[in-house]
Amino acid sequence: MDNSSPDELVGMTPRVAVKKTINNDEEVSMPLSHPTDGDKAERAGSEGEPSEARVQWNSKMEFLLSTIGFAVDLSNVFRFPNTCYSNGGGAFLIPYFCMLALCALPLFYMELLLGQYNRQGCISVWNKVCPIMKGVGVASCVMNFYVALFYNSVIAWSFYYLFSSFTSVLPWTRCDQTYNTEFCWNDAKQETCLLGFNGSAIGNFTEWSGNGSICHPDSRRVSSASEYFDYHVLGLREATGFHDLGPPKWDLSLCLALTFVCLYFSLFKGVKSMGVAVWITALLPYIVLSILLVRGLMLPGALDGIKYFIRPSFGKLLDIKVWSDAAVQIFFSLGSGFGVHLAYASYNDFHNGIFNDCVIATLVNSFTSLFSGFVVFTFLGYLSAKSGTPIDSVVGVNSGLVFTVYPEALSTIPGAPFWSVLFFIMLLTLGLDSSFGALEALLTASNEILREITTGVACIIIYLCALPNVTYGGMYVYRFLEEFGAGVSILVAVVMQCLCVSWVYGLHNFSNNVKEMLGSRPWMGWRILWKVVTPVILLVLSVYSLCNVKNPHMQYSNGDFYHYPSHTKYLGWLVVLSSISFIPIFAIWTVLRMDGRSIREKIALSISPSREHDEIREQGNVTRFGCNTG
Image (cartoon, rainbow, N blue to C red):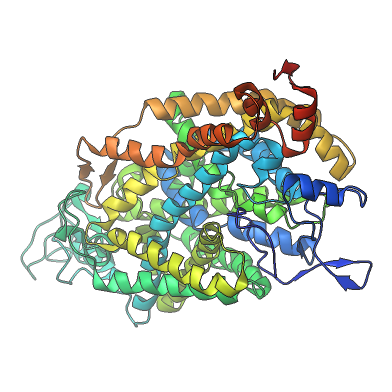
């Protein structure tokens, strides 16, 4: 049993069996930091930490697979193609890779180093680094909560599509259902309109009365998959907007409940048997996506879609919003700033060479995003050629892009229902795997006796809070939470983390910690990035994002736009502040509660790691800054 303190809010237990040995035969837990035998008790007593050893991963591979399992998730297959499409295709890739190299990778590496050295979760780690910044960890937990609200609705949609795939004819291929409009377009209508009334095609469109059908102009056609998602699965017609959501849809509510049932049993019983599941999660996406890519390349228009994906529009590079969206996407996808990777690293061997793990996880994450992007844009090119509309307007720019493009793609493959079942099982494994990490990050109880109750209560609370996402207007809520729940907030959280470690704790101290752990100080390039480049870029993007909070908008499948009410951005501000406000609140709270003789000493203690507190009290100064506390 892990006896970590409840303060390790996201100090997540490894998702595989753990071991802890000392003296080769007695099972105990591993020391929390890496003190010598002579000072273990002293540090434990002075810092209020347990002296027992902390559990470890059984092997490096288990840590790497779990890190990849959290990093490679629905955001790669679901969010990346949508963000890329809405930001101009290839125009988005340059900012994406720049943000990856200059911001995400350095901070991911820093986060893993912090976790492995200090062996704490994302809240309690700040006691060892800079207690005044404990609010950064709390902000991460709040963002995890918001992500859990809208992320699990995507899993619910995936369950719905999975159940709908058990049929001989996939339902999203039809245009003769009650929810369909006259503009619905599928292969059957394509054939009919090309033949015309007497077997001849008439211009770009023709109207005839042979069987009462109408072949509409290219610009008005809506794919059957788009109408199925908007009007049947979501039921958007029954809601007029963000202010009028309607009641929860009973079918989606049941799918959402099933999602949390799966999460409950994964969290309660599955943490020691996730090894095989991680392998399945890691391999299945590439098998399914490879099949879809091969099929897509055989269809007309596929190469046009790929060209749109890889051809940059340099005019877009002047729009700072594209750079901001790229930064948010890579942090959201890689998982930096949410505290989960920090917690995973805390279960590593103290001397584990973590750099290779960091690079491998980052490369796999980015490769998966790009691979998924190629698949999506291949079929966007096909849809564009089939409907005669430009690629940038072939489907609505909204969060349901993947639920319109992939189903359309699946319907073109022989034996479509089988591949549809396999694809949505893949989405479920990706979604549940990442939701497992996000939800675990919210569980504060470390006592295994209470874990059953704690997990159940957490699942019920989040389920009830997530119900607005499965109302008839749930997409409006989803889009709102996606925009404000963990957008600008994650940028603020990671820049505060970077500034604190590099400038307050001190890059010199951090480098010495790394040398103690790995045998050498970090490469000079990392130190330049941590000290100057990364915080400057993130500060600029954070300030821009905070100063340009606007009402979100959403595009329907028929091309019409929905603009949120004017007051929505103020509600969005509340959501943003509800997470990042914990940073100054906990800073003030930490200073006021610190045991110091004066306000200056309280501040000095609050910005210094706990191991230096006795020295500060005795000598009356903070040697790092050359400041006197008297």
